[in-house]
Length: 152
Image (cartoon, rainbow, N blue to C red; front, side, top):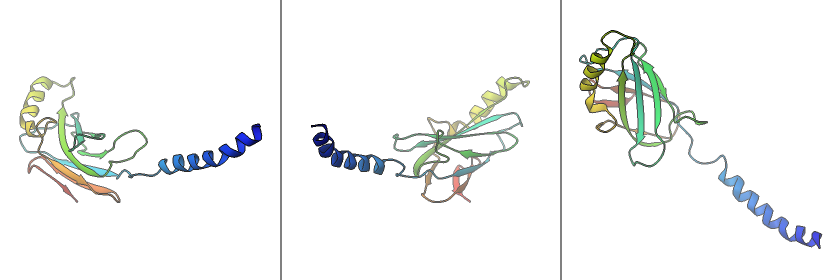
């Protein structure tokens, strides 16, 4: 009796395993994305400033990707975290926030001044967009002085 059950269920198990395997490991691959930031003269940065760059799916669906840099470096890799190294292809809204190091003199005043200078690039008000295309590594310049995101 057990042999009959096993013989009848083997083909179904085999088909099920093929369906499950087809759904694993496939799909869209993340694109490595590197960003260089250019700030307007009104945004007075110092080396210890923390800069967060966020790529939020324009559709509102999907996972955001982020990168962090300092006022000294101004470059970062944008990733969606987890196991994926990069950003999934698609259209994104791009926002930038600068947080002065709290231990620095005048950090609260600088925080307010930077927020005012970069208001147009906050997550709720940004008009910056970038379309991540499938393929190899993409290097972009996020120019906040010009209000553009361009591929190098």
